[in-house]
Length: 331
Image 1 (cartoon, rainbow, N blue to C red):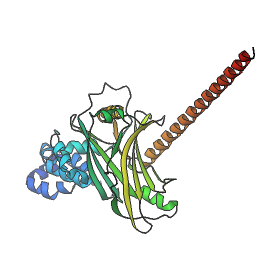
Image 2 (cartoon, rainbow, N blue to C red; image 1 turned 120 degrees about the vertical axis):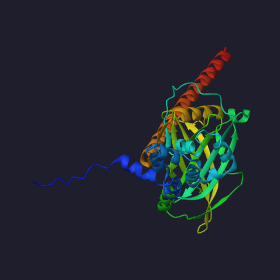
Image 3 (cartoon, rainbow, N blue to C red; image 1 turned 180 degrees about the vertical axis):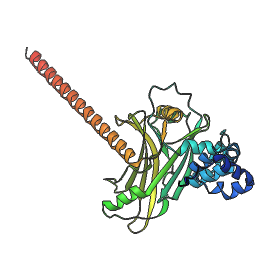
């Protein structure tokens, strides 16, 4: 009779007991500091000891600031310190990609006094720009105007290490694949955050008038009726540095209308509360953006046809009125 050489399954209790024999400082300094956010979150479920060690604020601060250098900013640090889970809460809210939530969710809470936007731009995974913007959302001009947030100051130009060129579409494709954006919105009142950028670009193009390069990032909101759009406008001289001239966020609907600040904040609040957070899927993001663009184009064409029909009717009525006036004047 042959001996059974099948190895027994690993004993989780034994693995846990081995960890328990190590000093917590060794686990912290030599193991946990080497883990990424997803692995650290998984390790926290191994045991009560690991949960206590894996939820320490310094670990999550290191992970968050390494992922999003903008969170080094004193404004961001002040707000994050008020969150119950600190940087761990920010990572949980902001790491997945935010998409698509129901329009029929519960009533939105009152708009917060302010929103904080942490913006990071990367080239081939290396940060090239980081900025935190604080926007007061109770101002009348903000609530009534189209939602528009600029990460740069007027006339500010940010140099990068990227070489600017006017070659063919191959370079635009390279820029689309290499330039990524994170745009984290933080609600200091509701203690929530969300990343409203698609991370990878859905389109890179040259502006037909200025010939500047525009790189577009989009995240779907409100079940294909609204989308957040982040546009990075680049310029420069051939052979020199690529410079960032504009980095802004807007929100638009399928009618081609820019959503107002009041409506936009309400949408973003509902998105933070009940949005779907998924792994970044570049192919799906591009498909959604192209579908949204088609819906917008169709809506504009319908609007144009309605206006043409209305103008035609108005012209016919005016002509009829003129004929009637001439007929009556003849008597």
